[in-house]
Length: 507
Image (cartoon, rainbow, N blue to C red; front, side):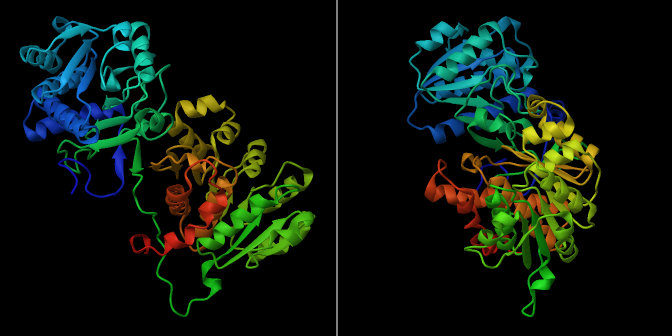
């Protein structure tokens, strides 16, 4: 059973910006007729008992308290730790007399328990005999890069051998965007409260947070009613969303669409092949590959279910475009005059489309708007599509994915840790980061999965979301036996069909 206040299922949740989180705090206090100190004690207790559950052998605690309410959480934790017989050293960024409200009361309670407060100094942290740290320095309250003592403290925590528990947010991480403000705590575990914050799940968030736990502190499901929210969060354990109807016993292949993969320029046949096989594995009825003539004979070896055609000109492509119902444009396409011909001919054909890789690079040179496509850029491709730098994309991934749909229409799928999917109406954040997916061919597999789901009648946004969830789950299965280093795109492919058979993701 989940603990009190913890989500009881893997349903998508709204994720909220820092300004909205302050409103949620106020709503929760009003609903439960409690003050901010009671809510602070509730948060501190939740974090402390998570710490004890995860690290029961660690009994020498170092607590770093900042000048705001995040620091107040730290004082609550420190007092609880003393009551449980742990050794506690507490360093404070500000004197107790300068604290306000609930934070000051929490600090006074810690002092009343005979706790001692030391002024914050990176030098004393380096030599401290502690076996676990609590980061209660800034939480969501840091609006600029840490500097001076704060910068030195974060750097010291990151270099210390003892693990760090971050309270609500690793200090230095922007909860709205997932960007590190200069430097951020690299926590082993983060306990966040009430509702998800998008920056914990995308950008640098997964690196900074470590194991991320959301404790809702008793917040009801409708607490955020009327607030816009930044995005919908699909937690990492959400089963792949398969909106396909059950197949009739008399079904035939023509009912499940015909995907045409256009790509595989000279030297890059493997990309088109992997996209095509992914479309087959996810259930497309027919899959064709339009590739360079040099590759046609070899592209289908080992996968005779694929129909492979060597294409020399746009005219050669026309019959394949006419027969197919969905196209996947870009895997291994290249940037030659041959590529440009196939790109233009494919864009001119009606029907749903998934665009990836060099298809996106060519689109950046000839922008157009379309309703029925899915664009699947990684950050560098997104930067080219929007005419900005990769750093600007990563500085605000949610704004970037919305800018893509504003400029190009359809559905934008911004890859990376915490993949974002936007249909122009609502952004979905698919939590889950698997470093094993950081290798060649994984994007081609994702493209094929999305195209295969489109071919079976899913709306573009549902196909994009389903493809991401399937790849994440297949990658997690592969990592269990293979680890992350050396995981291949074909290893993920091999696990797609077994996943579709699992009862929890059948329609």
